Structure formats: C-alpha cells, structure tokens
Image (cartoon, rainbow, N blue to C red; front, side):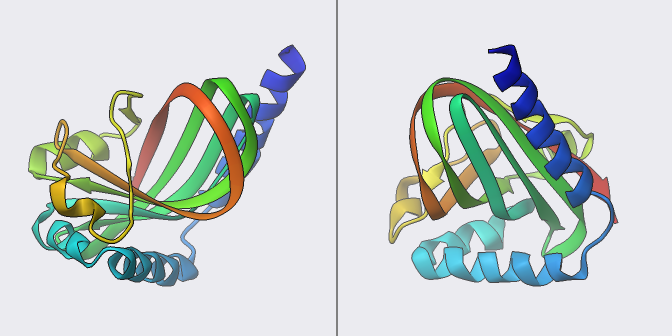
Amino acid sequence: MKLLISLTLVFITLFSSSATAGWDPDSKNEARTAINEFKKADPKLSRFFAKAYGYVVYPNIVKGAMGIGGAYGSGTVFQQGRIIGNSSLSQLSFGFQLGGQAYREIIFFKDRQAMARFKKGNFELGAQISAVAATYGASANVDYSSGVAIFTMARGGLMYEASVGGQLLTFEAR
C-alpha cells in the first residue's frame, strides 16, 4: 500500500514539474481547440464563455488509479476573454477505482470574487462540487456552485470508480 501511494505521488510530481516548467506556445492553441470542442459538443456552453468573469481550460488531464488514484493536467487561464496565466490541476482520490483515462476540463468563475479566490493560488475544489459532462444540451440547466461551474469531456480510456477526492488548482500569471 505504501508503494502504491509513493508511486502515485511520484507520477503526479513528474507530470507537474515538467508541465509547469515554462510557458508553452502550443498551450494557447490546445486551449482554443478544447474550447471549440466543448462548444461543438454543447452549443449552449457559449453563454458561460460570454458571461463568466474568467475560466481555466485544461485540454488534457490524465488520470490513473488502482485503489488510490491521481490525476494531473496543465491549463490556460482566461479573464474576460484574454489569456492571463497558466494553471496546473492535481488530484488524489481514494476508494474503489481502477483504470486510466484522459479528459478535458473547463472551470468557469462567475464573478471577480470567485476568480480572485482562484488567483490567490492553491485553490481547492472539494468533492462536493461536481462536474457536468459536456454533451448536447447538458449545460441548459447548470448553474454555478460557490461561484464555480465545471464541465468535462472524455478523451479516451476506461475508468471504474466510486471514489472521493478533490482537485487542487494552482495559478501562475503570465
């Protein structure tokens, strides 16, 4: 069990150090591609992009688990439509889970206060805040919870899980 915990932490550390080593010019293109994919999957998401004070786009989050799980991704932060920084997402979860998957995630911040909490760094999303899978019409009845709305889109893989865990987000201004 200690070995599994150690391997999970090593996995997260390896990905986090290489992904935040500096600005990647392709990250802007990857973020724009992810935004287009989300809008194509659910055109009603456009209202979130238009009205949110800011948002962060994680084009590729990799998650793996065997009892204990870990996930990591790096993203691009937008405020009022402009790129203002980078972010990293890491997650550690516990429970019945097995497999691996890759997915995209967008986190919308409703107002200046929600965005300010995120920009302070080490912003944590608890397990009680749930994400909505971006499918046609899924966003129609979604609203913000604590100033945050989260949408995900599967990229591939297979994951069986009944687990509890939160996400830790960091912010680095450009």
